[in-house]
Length: 346
Ligand SMILES: CCCCC/C=C\C/C=C\CC/C=C/CC(=O)SCCNC(=O)CCNC(=O)[C@H](O)C(C)(C)COP(=O)(O)OP(=O)(O)OC[C@H]1O[C@@H](n2cnc3c(N)ncnc32)[C@H](O)[C@@H]1OP(=O)(O)O
Image (cartoon, rainbow, N blue to C red; front, side, top):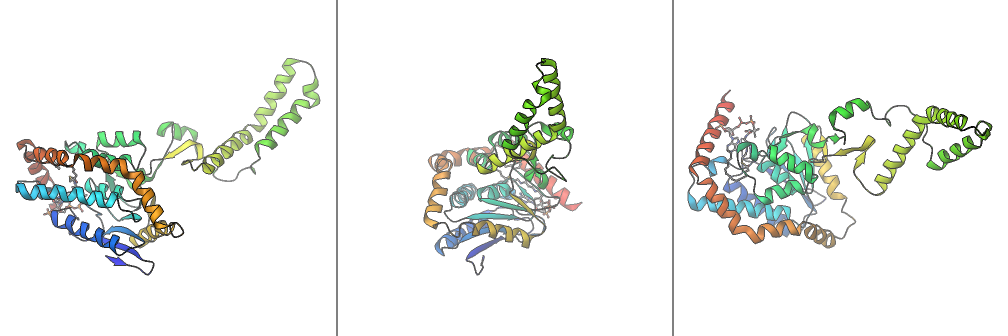
């Protein structure tokens, strides 16, 4: 851990080669989180010493042919890590400088803000694709970060997001619809926007014009048609501008043409230094907010999810132990480890 002049702690995961979360690393993380809280640091940024992996998730070696007592301690320590990180009263951010599968994604989604390096990295909860049901609190971390519907699809498909997908703006009409729509209306040169009042005045003027005064329905219709055709771009542009302004005013996260952000990550960065800078900027947003009020508000906001695990802790641990001890799961772990080894030797 390194604390900068602003009092922000940068905690670097350093367990080569891939920061897989074994018992020792989890215990070290828990001690560090306690220190950050005790030192009254302004906030904490989690990052990795590896240039390509944020964290490979749980260390599979902890689950393969395990010692029963250690396995239980391992799971309880993982629960502790999540309770401390997800429930931390101080601001937390992740500078994700590489792959973040499964438990790696869990760490990132337990933080309040995520900046990921652009590149061929992936992030997500892939458990279902590996034949495992992610425990409720792991699912909750994702559900707390991205819209519920997106979280359900990501969880049930074991989706690993590319950096672009994790950040991406989704259109309500799907990718095909977005392609059909072409480039966003508001990009590039455009007419100066007019207010809805200006549009209304123009419409009224048109209705009172000599053309409109002729008392023939068809001529009125033609005049209106002519007006709509000549002014359609302006009308559409203004409606979009007006809608976006309203959404911004209400802090609704939509952008041009109704695209919604998935928001598994908040920003991208070109390198680790930039990712850390962006995380610091996020933490400094709270400079003028009383820290007690901020921390308590965050904890109340996260209370329901935290409480669920606190209430079901023993049952959750039993479920994990029963699952890992199944011969079928041990077989899968053996195959998975062999596959990883084979891949790394290529
Ligand atoms: C079947 C899987 C899990 C079954 C669990 C069963 C029951 C548990 C029940 C409930 C728990 C639910 C929660 C699970 C959360 C998890 O986190 S499970 C772990 C899931 N993690 C992964 O699937 C990631 C696997 N790793 C990778 O995809 C890649 O390693 C990487 C992270 C993308 C990095 O790739 P890179 O090319 O840089 O490195 P290598 O692949 O060459 O790996 C180097 C080295 O590290 C070993 N290794 C990689 N990941 C792990 C790991 N998670 N645990 C232990 N060891 C790992 C890899 O084998 C290489 O070793 P070497 O050959 O000895 O060098």
